[in-house]
Length: 331
Image 1 (tube, rainbow, N blue to C red):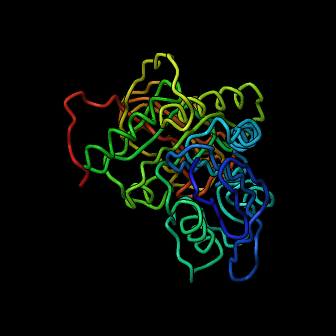
Image 2: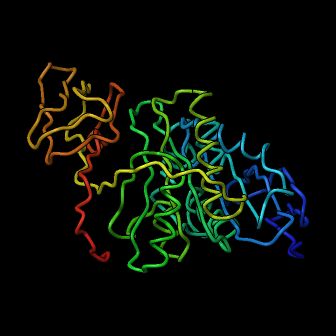
């Protein structure tokens, strides 16, 4: 048995035990309580972090993380597992959207955060310092929000470090999700990019859409997370054969150029060609129509389903199959 005490803030779990509770995070103007489950295994192994609820209105990951927290037993665990089912309480409980009602900031654009910044930047910094620091692997669970259609996928970033990238690829394949979308660099302020820059193998897991509360989808994701923990040898590996996957790279994002009413002509998973009309923005004042064309062919992995949009609103994201000869290091 390992002698290491697992501690996050005011919460601790001795070896061979599980502790559930909340830890206060100081955001400057206010303090929020972050729910955590600490599972300190009976035997040594890696430390794995699983978060959900980074955005509001994304329920599949929150439910799956909560279920997993109840199911994991320290006697079965090699190493330590930290589960945070609601990483961003203001957005989850008050806003139910991608941005925080505290300051209008999308936390998944500002990682690793700023301890002296605004409330959302402080929360990102707190999560990075208290949860990500010391982790050997990280999975961040997301879903299509209340106004977003989405095809299930796993995402990760290439770092150019071969062992790191190989471990992350194995993590991505272990969940049993067919599509893997690979970022060719670690730029940006989302959680897995910032973790990758810090040397932590990290994956983004996107399952569910339209803010649906789907118990079957949550159970399926729990099964996938067990697969992830087996791949990391936190749980005892079994003889399960990994399902085949398809690898993609991002090709284009499409944003609205107008304020108006959005009428999409696609759904997640549709294949599109370059120049195809995928929707129209109608100005409610005069009925003027603005056609939206695709800048690239490929497959739509997620897109806007809500009616009202403003300039800059993300309407769709398109990926293309990863070229088999693509061995480029990130720029």
